Length: 418
Image (cartoon, rainbow, N blue to C red; front, side, top):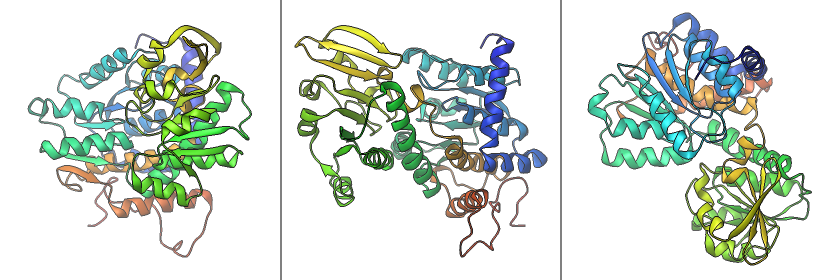
């Protein structure tokens, strides 16, 4: 990015300091890793929403000895003040808030190519960089490992792993309890409702709230919406998730039925074309459309635009689409991530746990590259337990196993098994 102005830098530093004060796990891991510097000599490229919380992770990586290039990888999630503060600290930052989808891809490609000798490690959110690496493995012989932190990205990584022999570990940090429960369910559940309420100012109690998807994120949104008095309907494509939703006490319907009486439709699947023409034609006038899945593709914006005769920005994050049949629909955040655009994303305390997992795997790959075998891998159970213990210790919670110390994950610095 170009040289940032001083006011932007100072605001970014203040935001990072605030986030750090609420992220004791990352702060503690940074103190450990700053001494041993397990990432010295490594070139890290990241493509993760560039919020103040991500900025704390980036500072940890730099303190651990790495050179770092970073991009937010999303149209609306980058906090420009955080990007400015990191840039003056020597991080190579690409992208900005308010990019087009094409510009997002360009920024990811620029970050991936930031180092003349290529990256040695990747930290990903949606498998953007991992896909680039998979398409050119022969040109990146120095790649030592990669991590992916999202549900959709982990699915994509496993698809790639079924056809490609990765010569380095690609570790999914999504599929562990300390990530999906804290982040996906409780964190995104809260921040999604926060985004909807900030965007619309609406009264939620009594509203017909349709949640598309009942994975970890959808479950969190459904629980939070019900807790605020909404009448929640869950839409599922999988029989297994439909059973879970029904036994959790939610009404389960096909979207074709649920759409007819919906006040709010929130997609949370990580898959494209969840809401398409057939559903748009059924929604009552005034219905709110929003997305908290991975990308803008969950709501088919081309289908919406084809029915739109005019639009009006009725609130900063609410675009009213007046349709050719006289109805109107309110689209939040342009179909992008409502929790990151209209609100501030997951709370710092939540991202502390997620990024602790991603940081520990990355530091472990730097200090002990044999810790994970080549190919697609899951975070080992010992780290999941370690992160849970760190979180409980930070919360001041004691339990029957509290006498066993936290912070014993191997790979941060020296080999603790020796």
